[in-house]
Length: 102
Image 1 (cartoon, helix red, strand yellow):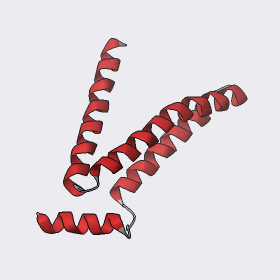
Image 2 (cartoon, rainbow, N blue to C red):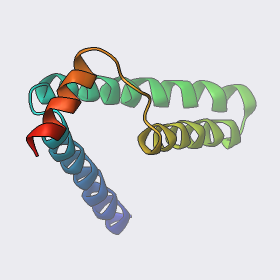
Image 3 (cartoon, rainbow, N blue to C red):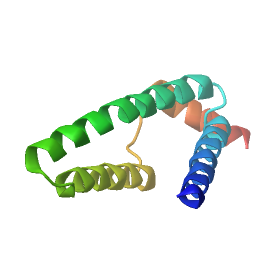
Image 4 (tube, rainbow, N blue to C red):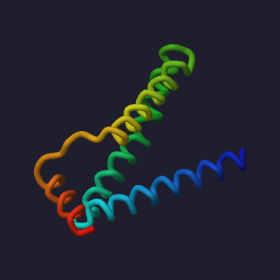
């Protein structure tokens, strides 16, 4: 169990650090706001996820629905990362400016 906790902790910190670094490179003018939004969404998920999973498990008596729901959210996040939506407005302008500077 300790090994699992340590390995999970390393992956969590790696993903967080890489996301912040990526954001600072891609959107230097707006990275603080993006990291703030990311932190707020992540925190909301940490609170709402266990509540929703507990509700689903208590209603059905098994973990299958909660695990499928969690896997679906992870897959949706992966797809959103692989195929990002086109952004208009300030984000698009910041991204173009960042790309031109490189």
